Length: 360
Image 1 (cartoon, rainbow, N blue to C red):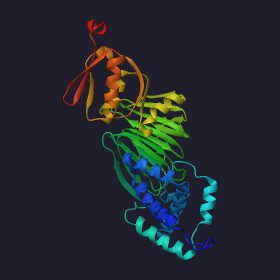
Image 2 (spheres, rainbow, N blue to C red; image 1 turned 30 degrees about the vertical axis):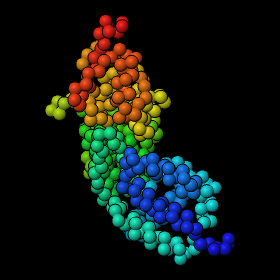
Image 3 (cartoon, rainbow, N blue to C red; image 1 turned 180 degrees about the vertical axis):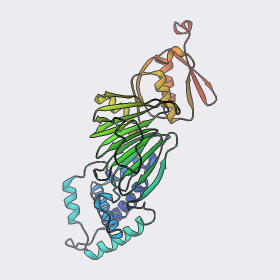
């Protein structure tokens, strides 16, 4: 091969195939064990990110060829977790192969992506869930990104008029692609949350729903909004929550004739980071009641912790741990907080150390 040839190098051919494979894997949802492998692939060569971006754009164009009525914003989108260096992107354009090779590459991509692609038209319905201790990132057909925390489940239900996510349990973070003509709703219990283009977190507890807005703003509606309409019941006031705020909506007992109560509170940067640390595989606590800390660890582990001494429940605790790191958590409690742990099979009970033992 002479230096002036436009033929792609073997390395570039390999990178193209790897990028196509990652496009498919990301669209189907990356799990915990996939994220490090994906990041390592991106860092292995600075050109990989730009190759993946162009691969994604190619696949979006192919989707439009399959369905000419599909708007660009409705095509599946592959998220790249950091900005692409413009210099590498420009170099990448100069590396594009001749038309004959490009056509062959596109055919190869079609073959790979057609194996298991979600439907990209107006009607889209799919269920995603995670087990205890697992998380998942999903690319939705409109370009929005869904991240599921441990032991969580959602049902995605898209129509031509609205995009709707039903959070049936657990916690999810949403990065919403803007499309004012096609509202994005998240339902959790009797609560409906509407977003246009924003990033927010929803946690569904038995007694409440927490909505934390990282970017943009959302409308929190304490009563459910019918899928057949695009606006909530005007008789029930909605609450506008902006970036840096959290709304906690109480959930009355099933048959109680009560309206949900909505409490809106500001979230400083540190508390925001702690609340969303699960996306980086961390649990962060700052002056958090021990009962809440124990409940958090129990979400991620089959081995359950219990507080046997009621006086410990409100004790403040701080620290950063891996979600499955309850052993390290117990060690800190025993060494620094005067607490003893009693193991009984798949459960550990926490009690305050007797005064006579603490003095020794």
